Length: 255
Length: 164
Image (cartoon, rainbow over all chains, first blue to last red; front, side, top):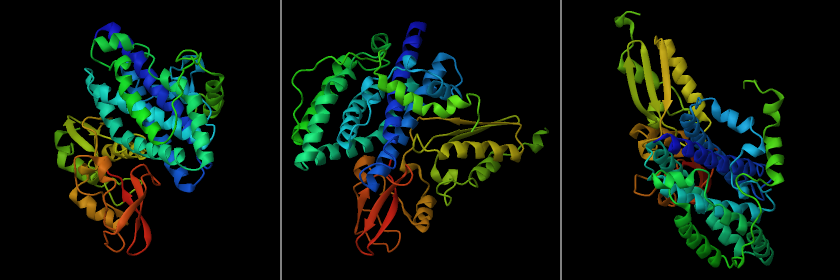
């Protein structure tokens, strides 16, 4: 990797980690509140997995940025403000109802599956190894959220209406998942990451086919959300305020 | 330290085989198959281990136990490096681990196959009564590596190790 690629990879890996972390925190908010006990357990597990994946990406980020991979992830999580986060806005949106959270997770998991397949073939071996590791766990998420998308879409009139409302709200944000990540162009050329601009069609085909099976209509026009990985909604600040509250009380504290 | 005092590779492996998984205490780190490599250089030892599930909090406990126990064994420097390649799968569980899991009341995963996610759907043997008339109730359980299953023969729920 030359210097420009290294710098691009540092930026890119941060965005991968931030997606996982911010979503993990939102998922964890369901703990104790999910509609049934088994789903409480499932969402808590998914949150824990995503948190583990965030740590993997943050460690690689630290390695390439010349930081200590043992300690730097904590710094990234607890010491940055919203301006420093590079997650896609879809993961920072408040949980809404069960349909909204489940559908967001499905749209994200389906996207993640596609980019992990690409990253699994990365020319940078540590990124390829990380992607292949994460993929083994992500299959379970997709299996779960795919089933719930179907169950809620085909369930009662109310569950269907809630899913359709969630889809209308989420779709523009989901499409934004495919806006080029920081550093992406530089890395695609070097074979270090897949080209989002071409693989997103695979995601679209998978997602649209599932939505059709669930009797959900994809919104026809996509309005720009007005937010991106460097311009966040106010919800990210609120979410971080809660997540970082304890760490900020005692920044040098040791658990 | 005199070279005669430096523990041998066998002693290191014996020690690792004596460190328990904090969440499934019947299994050692060696049973789990997470130890990828051990090397000794002078009075330093390096252990490479790989996580089962990436977010599993037990990983921190296990790393600390490696550092503590190998220091106590007599090494001046102990490193426990986390590696990801090749990723851990339930096929890495030792043959002994399967029997230990069953005795612990946790069904071992179905035998190795190409695709772990498909194996999830396969019936596993009930650790209580031995019946294969079982099915999956929840792919997610009380820890990342466990699933919740149900036995139709003895009409009891039980936990299974999640295939990965």
